[in-house]
Image 1: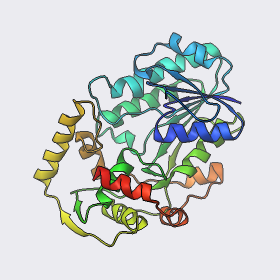
Image 2: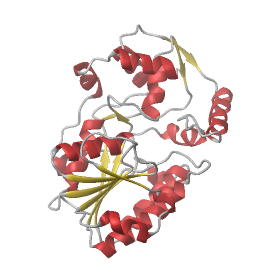
Image 3: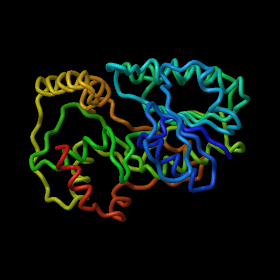
Image 4: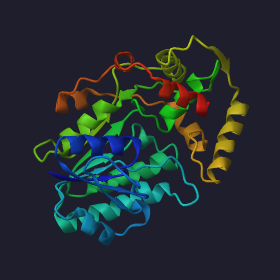
Length: 308
């Protein structure tokens, strides 16, 4: 099987590409900036989903059996557009798939996008709508916060906070049903198969709910540090921190603490995973059990301290 993976250098996309490659599938990976070097047999193509017309995708789609879209950005910033990546780019990709006769389209969205609480979720929801309106064999996956050995975005923030001896507790954070990265990768692989169910919107959530503070504490224990004291961050201070994150992003850095996070985190990331389990037979991994099986190494401890 030949699979086109969009966002192939991100946390989820790179794991999907590596998994499919290991399963002897032919993988073409697309990202804004392809890696200068890569392991395995994945063929990387560099171009920007947000600014690409349907014609741009035609060559990459030649001979492709399934498309997996893992592309996503948290917030608009110089050179980055949520509307471009999550909606307009998807419309172009759908048109290209129709032209090239590619039917199977697995799309990574996010849990709770129907609330349209920010430009992130509103643009993600618009991309979903475009796919649902198409006649492709689409599957929309809505994962909760994803945790794995690698760290990126929200999971990197949690690790940085876990390294602090006094842990700040942000106000109004909703419950999280953390999902293990390997479970999501297996799910994506399942739905790339031509015989897998299609035209499904599936929530991908873990078996337990965690508060944000509990998730940070779990990672701290995983890295074998003693229980930290907590400090409640007042709302006025958290607003300043989010705005500082926006200001820093204008300089090219993309911190997870920005105003989009402020709008999204009160809702948390919890949902109903029964449909996921029924369709795939996958039993969601308990995050605490998964981390216990893979003890943190010196690299994880160093990384957490470096970003804290």
